[in-house]
Length: 387
Image (cartoon, rainbow, N blue to C red; front, side):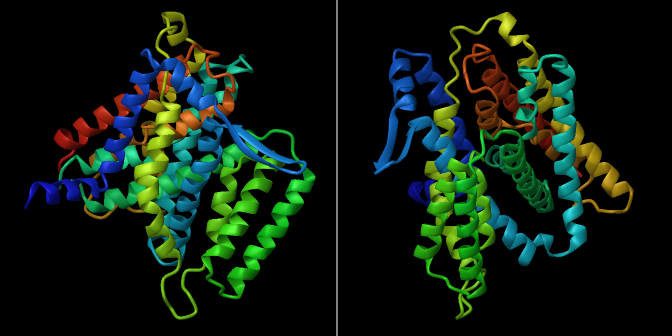
């Protein structure tokens, strides 16, 4: 095998997405804490948009990434979810129970730990959802690096758990992190959803129709006060599985998005959000309720919550262990769910709109907890969780 072929194989490996995110994170940290920091902030705050008559849609570059590009990521999650329910692992009701229970535990326990650490502080408590998220790309990349002794069923478990985890994040954002609601925008969004339903029932598979509807729905949801990421998930549910000729339509769209997600959207999201300013971080900031709550929620709460709820589901007979796996290996995967990174940074930005309110110690806590979860999970699975 030539050097080029080996490089191509590595790039298209599922673990490469996580590696690329690590590179972008390090790059963002270096740029933010160097002579380029002013240019970095100027780029993120660069106002962009368009005006049509009285309609205006202008946002800083950072929000175009966090409101716009990340909606495409959740659209892909929605496609994956629909595919699994219609054709894949979720087709049987029992197969849903384990990842669903694990995802619920991974939300309840970290949120409870954060709330306990910050009880009595109303402002800091707004960040209760920060440690409930898992970064799928990072966690999967670490799992893929752990060796062939890890059963492939655990990869499916992690992916299934991540899907429910991401849906949970969308619902949390939609319910708890919304601004003033607009009835007019809601009416427009409802009309678009009816159009999408009609297209689906008629079996129409013109991509341009769905693209136009998705664009109008995204703008209307954005203007409604609900976070725009919800639009991506809604559109995905109305994408037909097949064309009238029997050709895979949803799978084709899903496959066409993978390159953009791995090489553009998620790396750009990491670069825009991981630039933590380390200059003003002091011991007081590091030991603040937000920082401690985030670290304990991600590093301790996620692995304990995911494993405890999974264990109870299995022992009660409602679910079964992934094929070929044992509880030691399952716990190793649960450790990896503490890699919050991009999703936790995203929710952090929604919870605390003033990014430097804690001198960026909250962002640093996310990175440190994610790093610790990744290292511990890798070492545990690699050396202590063999069958």
